[in-house]
Amino acid sequence: MRRKILHFAQAGDTSGFFPQLARWHQRERYEMYFGTLNPIEPSLRQSMESAGVRCFSCDCGSRPAYPLGMVRLARFLRRNRIDVLHTHLFEPSVIGLTAGRIAGARVLVMTRHYSDYHTRIDKHWHVRLDCLCTRLAHRVIAVSRHTAEHMTSVEGAPASKIRVVLNGIDFDRVRVSDPAAPPRIRNEFASDGSFLLLVVGRLHPEKGYTHLFQALPAIRARASRPVIVLVAGAGPFLDRYRAEVASLGCADIVRFLGFRSDVADLIAASDVMVLPSVAEAFGLALTEALHLGTPVVATRVGGIPEIVDDGLDGVLVPGGDHHALSEAIGALLNDPERRRRLVGAGRAKVATRFAFERMVRSYEQLYDELTAGSEDRVLAGSLGHHPGL
Image 1 (cartoon, rainbow, N blue to C red):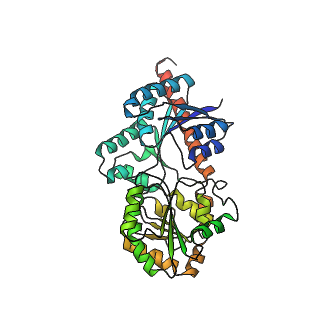
Image 2 (cartoon, rainbow, N blue to C red; image 1 turned 135 degrees about the vertical axis):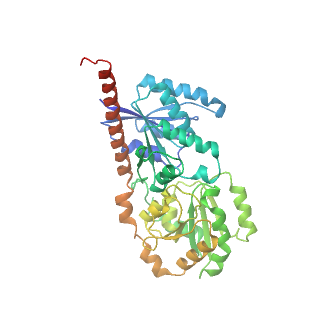
Image 3 (tube, helix red, strand yellow; image 1 turned 45 degrees about the horizontal axis):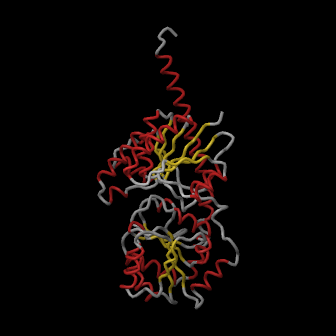
């Protein structure tokens, strides 16, 4: 009999993470369900259902609706006899794991997709809820060793409850759409031969955009050719960042592209990809850049050093230091031989360590261990009621 797995998350998925889970899970052994706390985005529902995954939504339009959503989820778990509830991200984990306990679900797993974010911004109640989620879950998957170390050393989580499973990428998905696409992008944004810098990520302070923007005047002055910066991402801080760039006199070299579905083409077209984060549990965009062969400059924070080997396949600088960013980026732009050495240097590492299929198999191994353990506990409990046996 196939085990039933419900992945419970937010309403949307710009990274394609869950459709990739649907693609790579072993259908002969697992029946995958997908649930959301908020009303599921139609495109995501269509993508999951076209992959044969049954979808469910608690349809919570706001936080006051969360208690009702918890009840709906508990009923769904019981009615469908879900073997494993696997939650993702903060609010779905708080609501989902509580509902799982109410429903008496056999196995509860949570993936911790962030590390020290709540601690760093002094969200005390969020940290307490993080700790509650760890207690409610039978196992917590940390997406990096940094995440696991933060949970044990700062939040007091028992190490035995945590399993490190590095995030993966689907190599079939991270590919250039057309050989002509990168030259076309370069012609669109840098027809005069300018250097192209690329930043990929949601527009949020933890991504370190302010530090990169503060570095731009020095980068501009140092670089041997003009520089254009492409920012691929959406978020509520767009107006603030436009104002910051303008105040630095760099509005003419920064292009805010919004959400893009052609990120692989943008990466392949760029001279250097930059990830200036001040907090980063993993840094998935870096694995994509290394796979596609684009040199990277990133900050030495969170799980990033677990992806980029400084000096071998990329350049790492301290987080929150715009002087270090400007020096590293400027030096790399002006050294074509060094850029050539970095091109493709991390591709083999990414292929072996960060394959999406490898990540999914690690998930499934954990499911097997936990479901077997739950059966053992049930058997031990039943034998305990019959002392004569």
